[in-house]
Image (cartoon, rainbow, N blue to C red; front, side, top):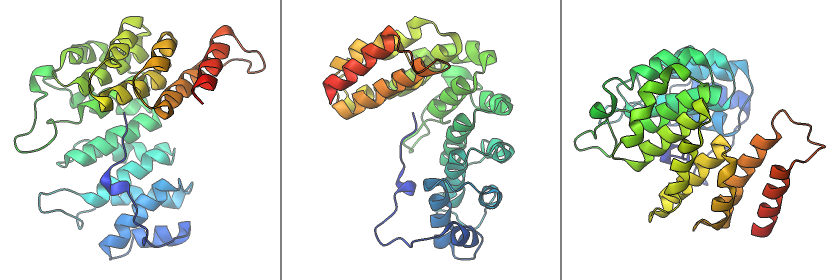
Length: 275
């Protein structure tokens, strides 16, 4: 599940830009302007080959470094490229999966999920080397050694069936978010209801954030059997509606939208009851 990060939040006094000025700023010497320009181009989904080219160059930036060795500009550039729907960014994003910065790798995996390009499969699989045994927390840091959630979700979205045997053991990982990412991917790759039910069970978890996450995952994979459980989940109606909208979109894929089947009618009735 993709969540907004601190880097993506613009302040009220942030400069107003045009696409042309943002592209210019992304290539200037002022790091703060470059950082904001990368965020802005993604936020407003600037559909421009020039924007993509400039962001791809920013993926290799060495100037913007944190004291801990992070690459803030690279993170914003990687996030932005996933929103621009231009697969010319795929090679650069794949290279980012080797970056020393965890958050760059995470952003790259999330954007590769959005772009859905199978060329990323080998590089994503490499981040799962060592399996569950290697998926431990980095000492002194708030994250695991790899961005497993983003990687698993990307493999599922890409349709990487070659990864099924590698992904399945992550259903037993000690971190519930990782379990959910694995269940989400396994359902996308196999369509087996047992993986959808794994996500449904999380709707009973005592942690509200995990319940919200499970709703998002169920909507993303379109697990129709979860509709009734989504409707009664102990989560704000706004989150339920987003999940149900995801289910509805899956029902309408490749269908004559002028003809409503029982599932689409049921979903619309549930959504109407929550409004």
